[in-house]
Length: 364
Image 1: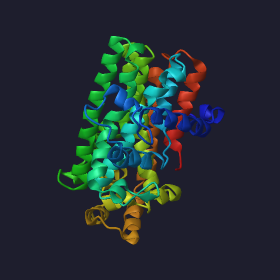
Image 2 (image 1 turned 120 degrees about the vertical axis):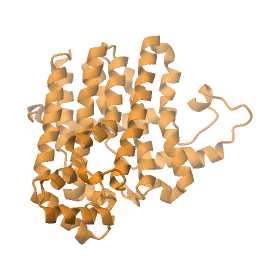
Image 3 (image 1 turned 180 degrees about the vertical axis):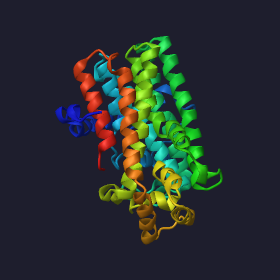
Image 4 (image 1 turned 90 degrees about the horizontal axis):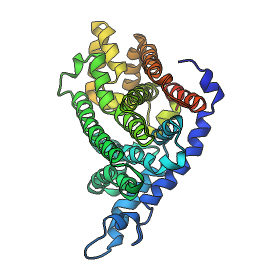
């Protein structure tokens, strides 16, 4: 995938412009402060009382604490780009585009508990501020609350579109759990984590990181009226974008200073013992001494920066960064070829292509 489209389209500006629109749509359904007039209560009114204080303290406030920390909002941006590429205006799709974004932020809340993380986007993790009990409940709530747009706008959707969107949601949420299970088992060393193949990693990523990108694309395509063949091909493209995005995240975790600031260190994945593709490739290529040492450091779950730097040096020595970058680009390029001729609007196609390029070449 060449950079010509990227040069003509300012993807960063598109993301910057899209993010506040997405946040405004989220706030429409998940307000910063719940009142009796909230959409939630119109869809699901309480039987006995509106006791709003605990819901605001333990649901709305923690949700917006996480959302206000930023993030690129690239999943809803992808959603809107696919709607546009299929001839639908963004105002039709905007409310639905919040679904994968809110779910994504819910996974971050849960991930941070599972990983015993301290910092998320420059602030203490949600469970450090609100407690583990509230954080778990908030993360779970964020898996379901963004479905409110489907409930409120059901009259605008055909029965077939509603069925397909809900089916996509269920399939991808199951995939998300399976991907997380694989990732946790590997970095805890309970599932033969030292003999993983590239294919094992790609499957974990397709389940975990590819899931919400795939959800975005497939939901958008269904809502835009695409046939089942195009829905699947766009889902595959988005999955590859999501997996490539994760690969770039893994690279930036070990090399990117700006990225490291948001996580509090360089090499946080080393402390987790994470089996990224960088690690898997290195373990396959390294000599016995380096392989043994890398495994030792990963198993320590150390926060010693010198040890993390030693592990990063071993990974760099065997060309893992170059290999992973090349694979990410190849995956997105190959999947793009499958949809290129099927998309009807040239300008929107160019934006979508530039968007994919940006996500796999970004430096923060």
